[in-house]
Image (cartoon, rainbow, N blue to C red; front, side, top):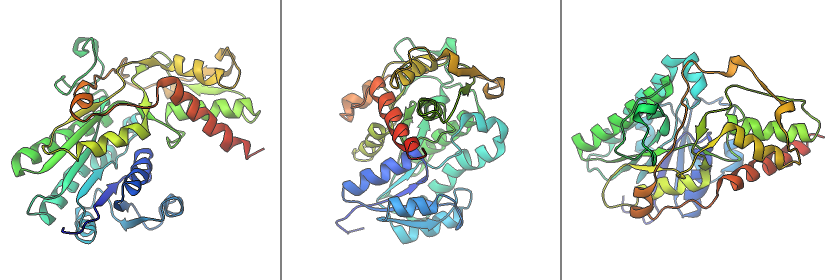
Length: 332
């Protein structure tokens, strides 16, 4: 790996973080590679169109041999494992697939690196999540979860991610790999899928404003989350792999807001002060086990990585609503 230009391999290129990271690394001068599942993936065309500088491999986190082939061809300096079945609600409907991709897929990627990188030159980033903490009252620290806080996942997604976290730590300690986990609290943005509550809200708000939709159906409105902007968080991922020593880091804003507060700001962006006539609660969107509050403490990342967020909560909501207004306006 004597080439001057750094190479990075991304899993999860079709997701929110994958898109942000691909653009970020390209601007940094990296040669960017990514795996995409299936030759007929419906998102392939969009990825090729938006990221013409990314070299794609047909590979699958559940197929270790395909990951080995991708490693052998790309010869990356850095691997960012962002691929996952990442919708918490869906993980209750298909826990087995969630485990195979989100949990065991991490092991498959680590093994592919270990088998193709005997000199341990590759740096590995695992996308961990605040959902591993669970947000239960008895294990909730007053100032927010840190890298040392205890875990108690409340969904199949959280459980699978916790396996990914521990197997990453195990490979770091067992094989002396540069392998880290970024424990990221909720991060949203214009690339977020509309199946996620924040984008579901901003998309619906735009459509209601434009007369394309009458109302919005949601589940519980009281859960509180530590919401940041995804573009800020991928910068933190990169910073973790630029360190001399592999360590895990929490990325968060240090403040929480309820879904109700998100609704307040989103509707006000389009001149609607009272959202209650437009929002209906549907039991179908309520989970068997809900996480009440998730609050992170990013002190370690701020001190050691020099990482800070640029977009605050009102700015995040504004950015997302304006993006969806622009998109939905083209349908008139």
